[in-house]
Image 1: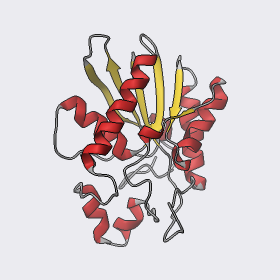
Image 2: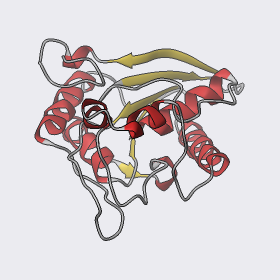
Image 3: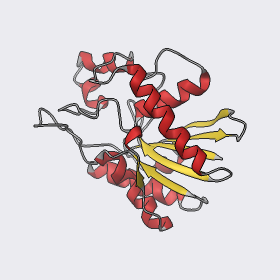
Image 4: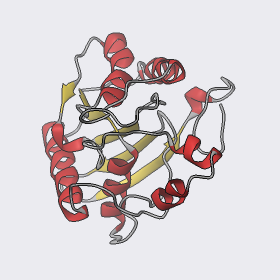
Length: 207
């Protein structure tokens, strides 16, 4: 089967909230999500799943409308910082020369969940989705840390679970999952749907 992992669109900034920040998509993020949905609507999709966090769920909704399928929420693909009371897009941290952006890119951990627990729940959740769609295709809208965790798992890497690489906004990552248990990375960071749009894609790129 084909497992398609998708990072959410660009969220708004949320700081020092009472409880988890859980930001929604920005105006640009909604447009990224719409373009992603249009791009993926031609593919045969058997299952659509999303993290419970707003930015991932809202990213799934345009595709859900195009294919007539409601996204199923999977708690295990929430981001490692889901309980943080602030969310600042890494591009803003870099532009301000905030030391936190380099800490994030270096994979430094700042969470109430230890890395091993995060890694295990991500793997368990995605393997559950794979088991439901043998021979089919499932799309999961989630987060950069989740994508990093699963791809490093496939590659057998023990470091950089959080910061192995930088997934762009609404980027597509395809994994071939065989019934025998083999997992192969097919593509990383597909962003054809953003090319020529001028929308922000990541740290240094625009569409």
